[in-house]
Each structure stands twice: as structure tokens, then as C-alpha cells.
Image (tube, rainbow, N blue to C red; front, side, top):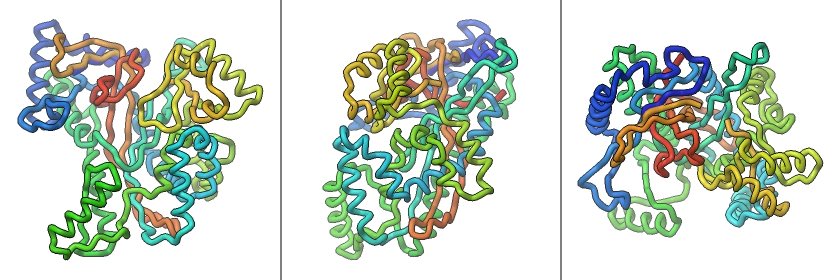
Amino acid sequence: MVIGTHLNNGTTDVKNIVETFVQDDTDLNELVDDAIILAHYIGMVTRADKTKTRIDSCVFVPFTLFPSPFPRQIFIEAFEIQKAMQLLYFRVSNDFEFLIKTLEPVASTNKFVSHQLKLYRAVQSQPIRQPLTLHITRSDYMCHVSKSNESEHEEEYQLKQVEMNIGQLGGNSISNRSTILHRQMLEKVGVDPAIVPDNDADGIMAQGLYQAWKAFGVDDAVFIISRKFHDIEFFQLKIRLKQFSENKIKIVRLSLKDCIFGTELASKKKFNSQALSEPGVLEYFFPEPEYAQKVKNIRKTFAKMWSLEQEDDEIMKIINYAIENPGNYVLKPCEEGGVNNFWDEEIAENLRIFNTEERAAHILMEPCCEEFLGVRPNDEANAQLSNIVSELGIYGYLLGNSSNMAVLRNERNGYMLRSKREDATEGGIHAGGGVHDSPYLF
């Protein structure tokens, strides 16, 4: 568990949230014990055996003791832009020429992406057998703090997108439980729990699945949820289903997919802000006049990113500056899932030795502080006070038709807040760098 205090100087009573709520070490230890008991009670737990082979014991997942301050306006902006983001990626995922053109430089050094493009071309050469597709999404953002143009002593908060996740998402059920836990912890210290917004992250997922089943149009259609990761295992699953049903269950590959092949490609880092931020790209995907303001709002969320495949003067200047000042950047592979990023001196070392094709497989980005007290299972020091950075994810889904580009449903609801230590290079909760959190809106 983590107790968080943010360094957002724009806050007042919520800036040093731990000092405000916790009177002394005795008070702190009692609150920590209460939070751990509550976490077990509401199912905010995971298996104690990391190999997942035993099911007879569990531990609580890491979380902040109190919710972390987060600007209310930034939270509202992230929520309101979600539908437009989902529509954008639906259109991108169905634009064959744009996907191929954007990813070909990456494929030259990435065998997996090269293989994906080969499959994608083969798929596109065939007629669409199942036009319906479901995009279950979570768009992740950070609150970027910059100096005000009017006064260097004032700060401005800006919403900046980290990435768009589509398809296999995690954390939504724990996010709901984090909201429950943090609201009760606030009540214990006499704070109105309504300061933490409502959360229905798992409900929006269920709604998306139901609407997809309904659109499928077969009354006795069933969901098949498999945690297998390889085609050969899926093939074996088909055989077992047929055997179990005495061949009454017929498996045909006309299923409604949770995102089509193009969506897998459109979710790559190359598209998250970098390719889509090029002049005229958003206008290309949103030619309708009524989306003009949405285009402006989306563009404002793009963090500064640079594609490195070119060798013009501007890109070389940025590369040289990053080599001299690596602490100002993060270097991300185009094919990654929140890990394998390069930080600090690793950036300078790799930029010195990368050839043109290797540089093309990466994105250079400006990283978007706060302080928190965190609780983790099996920690000797049960609570740790640290400076943190928070990442907000907004959940939603889009159900569409890839043949005529019609949108059947486009909805959003629920959120996830993850926080990590300011000095942590990776923020994954399972990897040990992050913790579950909730926004204390101000």
C-alpha cells in the first residue's frame, strides 16, 4: 500500500494529503491495518503464489492508502474526449493504406511487425466475412504540469495521452474496488467520500460484451473466453468443445472479434500521438465539420513525440539534444506494452549506436510530481512515503461495422488510476513499479 502526497503546487489542502489526514505513526498504522482488512473483504486481492498454481491463499494488491489529488477539469476532459478517441481509432484501424504506410519503417527492423503486416495484407485480400467488430478500450493519460504564460509562479495542468489500449484490458474490476476502498478510508478521517468520482469500469466492459452479443443476432450464441495465447492451443480448445458436445457445437471462424486485425496494428506506439499528430492526419480521419472542435481537443492531448526514421536537420538536432540531456526524454519501442522503455543514460547509449532502421523502430517522447504513501504485501516497512506520478485510464467501447463504417454503439464509463514512484522507470503494477489509486478531485 502506498500513501501518496502529490507535488502539484496548485493544490492547497490536498497537496500534502498524508500530513492532513494522518496525525502520528500510531494513527497511520491503524489506518493501514484497516485498509488491508478492507482490501481482503472486498476482493481487492490476487493469488499469493506468483506461479498461479495454488489457489488456497491470497494477498492484497498494492494500493495507495488515500486517493491522490488530481485536477477535476483534467479528469472531465479525459472523460469527455473518450468517445472521439474511440471513433478515431475505429477509423484508423480500417484504413489499410494508412496502416501500411505508417508501419513499414518499423517492420524493416521488427520481425514481429513485419509478420503482422504480411498477415494483414493477406487478410485484406479476402472479403470481410464478419463485418462487426468490438473495440473495448482504455485511453491512458497523464496530467502534465507546466508554467503559466501569465506568471512563472502559477502552474497550468494539461491532459496528455500516454497510449490507447484496445482489446485485452486488465485492471477494471480492481479499479472499482479501489474506489470503494478509498471512499471508506476518507470517511474514516472525516472527509466527504464523494470527492472520489463514481466508477463503473467493469460495468462498461460487460455492457460492451452484451451489445456485441446482441448485434451478433443469434439467440443461442455463446461467449468463449480462453486464456490460451497460441493458435495451436485455440485449435485444441475447438476439438475439446466438439468432443464435449458430441459434435453438437460447431466451431466456425465467423465469430465477432474483440477488435479486428487492423486494430491490433493501430494500437501500436507509432500511432499513439506520433503518427496521428502529423499535420492534416486528424482532419483526414474527421472530415465532418461538426468534429472540428473534437479534432482540436484531441490534438491538445498529444504529448511531444518524435519519429526518428528521418535524418533531416531537425530530427538530428533533437537526437543530439537527447543524447546530451537524456533525463528530459523517454525512448519507447513502437512494439511494446508498457515495458522495455529506455531512460536516462540508456537513451544516450542507444541513440549513439542505433542505425537508421533501429531508430525508426522507436519513438522519442517527453515524459509528462506528487507524493504518496503506498502499502504492498510482504513489505517489512508496511507503508512507504514517496513522490509519485499518476496515470489516468478512461474505459469505454465502440461497436462498429467495418464494411460500411457504421457505428452501432460508442460509450464510455469508468476509470483506472495507477501511480508509481517518481524515480520508477516502469509503472506496471504486476511488474512492481505501480500501485492502484483513485483520484481526489480538486
